[in-house]
Image (tube, rainbow, N blue to C red):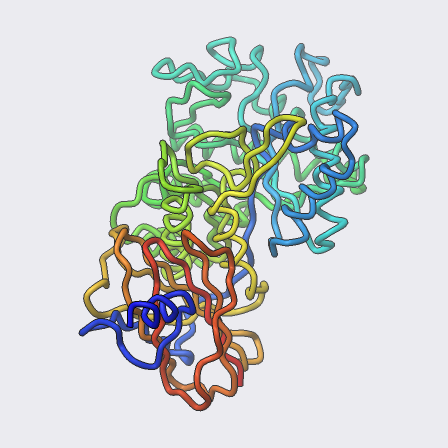
Length: 467
């Protein structure tokens, strides 16, 4: 009997309920919430680690890492960092006559190599760049750091110079064959960072955004060969802060120039994404960064992996169109910031975060619709609480439904999944858990109206229904 139950748990599917009250996930395939526009991830602080195998003349390792990042995972956006390096001193006093030195763009060599590898494997890949900080000579604290409580910001009168600084990066990347499709002028400008950054109040941000947007529009007229990116803002730490503090002055001052409402998701209070979606007034809503901050002592970071699913599910269920993980690569560490750990030039390792993210993305394509899913029963939970999280998507032709379910807790449980308004012809399922990576589960019995799956602690389940 013990062997039979163990086998059932391993296979992940059973026609009978293993507990008295399974958690119920019900998908209403006819209730469309919003369009799904894709997933992304960043190459932000450790670009040199990503390219380190090429630097050590290890091309096979380099190509295998690129395959893991861009061939094996279905993403549509690569988030890049505009660093402060390419204007160490003021090039001149005329922002309309850029005179930048090519050698100061050396840091972009990593970005170009990564972007080329991404586009080779995913031709649809689009690039989104964020300015983390202006160069030190533009800052009130004369340092690339945000200055913490000193709140270093842009010196008055340098708004057009900042626009020129950003345009120089866009121009350089375009000349290297990497067009930048999306742009944020600041990273978490609401937070007194000590990392490279600069602080902007809501009104300062709106004023600066307006001037930079106007500058980029004029430069696009003067240099039509350099594509003008769509602007993503306010890119603050919190969706609630974005909705309540940063969006009102931004929309009031220069709403026509704001293409996408984007923000990070590190303050998970209230129904934050629904609040932001309403404040966006019809604009696409992006989660531009999320990760697990802090240590994780679980095996292969399985705890963090399930938390990623929690964050993705909450965002999509409440209105987000795009969701981006923070960073592809970090050095080896016991934290949930990145999907892959690279020991510079020596080796690389996939975490459970990677396997979970890959599974979540595997059956999804832009243009699908998010559809209503509800969770009831003993493991149902409120926003940002442990328990079962579910998120469902419908293909454009309506003939395919993908349901992603995560057990965001330390106890195993059974999940019963059923669909409304859908005639099922075939069902496929995959699971990632402590002992599995995107393991294919047995097909359920023919004509089954609902299925019950075993989810181990922190287990992640993807089920695809086809007509």
